[in-house]
Image (cartoon, rainbow, N blue to C red; front, side, top):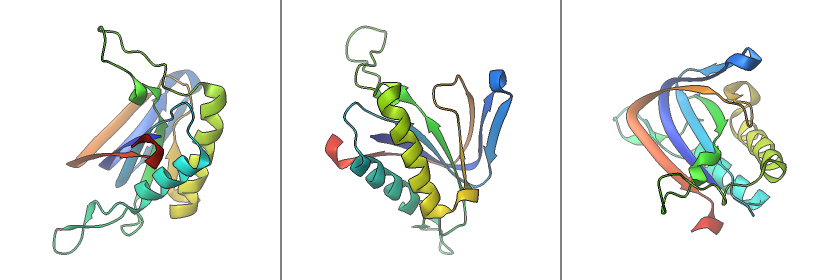
Length: 152
């Protein structure tokens, strides 16, 4: 499992076809890729790491606080393209990305795990498999990748 995390001043997803939008203020956007063979242990590790990363500044301007510490919000967006293989040719291959029947249950459990860490009202999501417009106003900029232990 792979998460690309961006610290943001604001973020959002917009899905015109569904008349759907979800927006957050200060917090993190998690772009989540699920790989074939990922497990609940993978999602627990990545979810917990994302919620506990100390990437927000304390009173001394040192990255010492987590999204929980600053009462921040989290936007979770499924992103199978994080497993795009660009080694050959110019068109990425996505054979490592989990198929929807495997990925959707893990995505939903990931969301529940994050809600358990920070509180339900602090978490917004995109819609799995939908074509979304994603707004990310990166703060810092701070962008990090978290991968489950089985990937390393």
